[in-house]
Image (cartoon, rainbow, N blue to C red):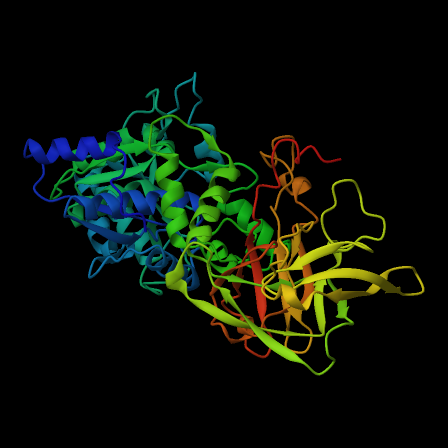
Length: 557
């Protein structure tokens, strides 16, 4: 994680001012996900802000599941969210909560509103309720049930809790102002009937509070000082404050909004992410092409790169869309610094060194990182027959080609200089074997007479290589703003995954799951956290060595 002093922003300045003037004594923030899906890259910004600011100011951050909708929630989502937050390097300690922990308290708050004449049971159907809500330019229409007596509302609400009414038969609404210019204040529903088991409370309840009702009150019950959320909740702030002002709560947290993280070439709507999973376009919520934190982790993205990305994106009140290239750049920078090097061949062609003894073998000492001696070195085996990349040989080389062709000399990385003498082709004309001779005086890849060679290629010893599966992931969408012209599924990249069966150094089989490497000249790769084994190594490409999606490259036909 980046330990440099982060740049200041208005949230940090706001909290510092509150502490300086004694408005708060201890900073208490919260990260309040709804357990109705996996967390995505946008949530990473909120996690880093809420946990990061609490840590910076010596306070605490709660992890609270705002679990008010049993129709969409699942214990698997709860477990994944906990794991993702820990993976980013944060810990909530004993402060793990659920909105459902407060269901009885929230029910009593609703009863308090009824006693004060601030809530009523409404029998309008969902369609009628929507029809009477009004528009941005027209006021809503009051419900015919709005002026029921306190006693009648208390009785009806108790009967709702007892399960006497069917789903959709009635709701509890706050009595605010049907003519308010803010539609959120037009007598919003605060309780509805859902006869579904809850992932945390089981069958204890058949009525559930709405998010808007539960969220601010849960903040107050936990003593949250700064309720930091994204800008789409700005229009809900008057309702957040109205509930706290009407009820006898322990404190009144401050809701402060910041811009959410939008990213090009992806979607972060949980509805759309769920669609991708359910239609089998991706292989689950943790598919490495997904923008979920679990997907990014499985792909091999280091959490430090996400921290750096969030810091660079910054915090403001202006909505923006960040270029995916910035995230990829942060990933490259972190991996260039920390990932050891290794060699693998993903589209193999056999290379035979005819001048090298058939049974001979030797080992070359190669540094694990060219800039970090602390990462040590490794012994790489070498023999007469090697695997090289098919792209590193050309019978008819294009202009500027600096790799192997007949008569050309190249450097085998860290080994010898070799000169191509001929090839073997199959019935279709494809090259299957490249024949070379080597300069035995060039051990280590250096010409004894100082002569220059065209280029350097990587290789693996055919005798010692381990078979590996490489999953080459690309961006999931072909357009910067998927769905901008219609159905977002029409913008799915059909070539977002290519699977190669290749060969690698022996160390690549022995490494643990989630180990990251720069496979030289191929990109940064990670041993799959679930599928990789010593017997069947599986590596996911995290990111290429350079941006292949520049504006020029993206103008592909």
